[in-house]
Amino acid sequence: MVDVLAGFTRFEFDDGRWRRPVYRIGSGPAVIVIHEMPGLHPPVLEFARDVAAEGMTAFCPSLFGQPGRPISTGYMLGTIVKTLCIRREFTVWAAGRSSPIVDWLRALARQAHAECGGKGVGAVGMCFTGGFALAMMTEPSVVAPVLAQPSLPLGRRQGAALDCSPAELAVARARMEAEDLSLIALRFAGDKLSPCARFQTLERELGGRAELHTLADASARKGTGRAPHSVLTIHLDRDDPDGETLKVHRRVLDFFKERTGA
Image (tube, rainbow, N blue to C red; front, side, top):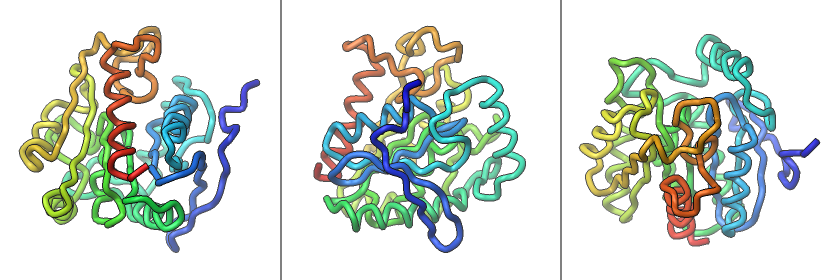
């Protein structure tokens, strides 16, 4: 059996409020890789290895689920129910506010920057955590946010909303102008969990500072049994060197390298 966590070192990070395990790989400036549902599954770990291969240190916090466990329908549904119904660290339905766990992620970014150096820290959120990277920009060390299929807040009526507060958004906007920063956001065209209206909000609020990529559904990796959604992980088609998904994957890695000084 392949150990999908081989090469990673594990440590516990405690910000004084929450304590969570973090898996780390690589060397060089830090990138916080925030997993999607149902947890720190193998394709997320594979993306972290890609980050490490480019001369950066990937920090992979485990916020829910079981680290390294492969995706299955039962595992996915069980984690979703548990997270939506029990976890107080996440704000799922409300617009205009970030999840409390973002404070923990900011503290992790601050420590990672102090340890790893560089010009700053990259951060990528995926699906359920997709918008976290934007809210993290109130931490000065975060200089390269990537929003992969941002899916919160949930609900059709919240399709245009962002899961960050007006104050957090204002800080991000001001920092982007003052420090010449930007963000990258990714989604598939037909993805109802990450609607087009949300990208329109990013464009309206951040203008040219938001580099938005909407990929054709046909570019997603085939045979996953799931509708196109996870741009950098499940639906990344590594077998098509000229495909859209691999091109944006390359763009994200280059963005991290440029902004962090790797």
